[in-house]
Image (spheres, rainbow, N blue to C red):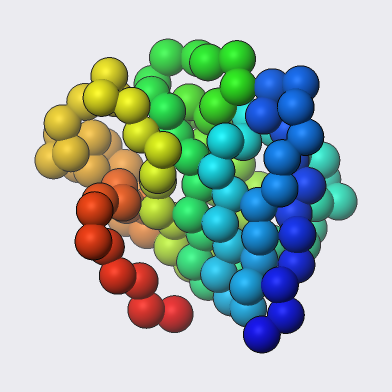
Length: 111
């Protein structure tokens, strides 16, 4: 499979995520240019960071992550890099769109 680096910003710091086939993994992301978003549009599975509900200077919060998902339009999204301040799994999961899930230890994703 081809691995495509995806350029993003972690606050003022450049970071990279990766697209591998129909899977993209982006963590420690706060923002991304539209030309980089185009590299992952309509991907089957997206994994992105969501630190908490409140704004943070270097990570997506819930509102920003959901807006990012609207731009990318993935089949499924899994949230990772989650703070203990985000809330309990069942409570947060019940608030998310049907194709968005909280990741957890030992999660296996089939693409």
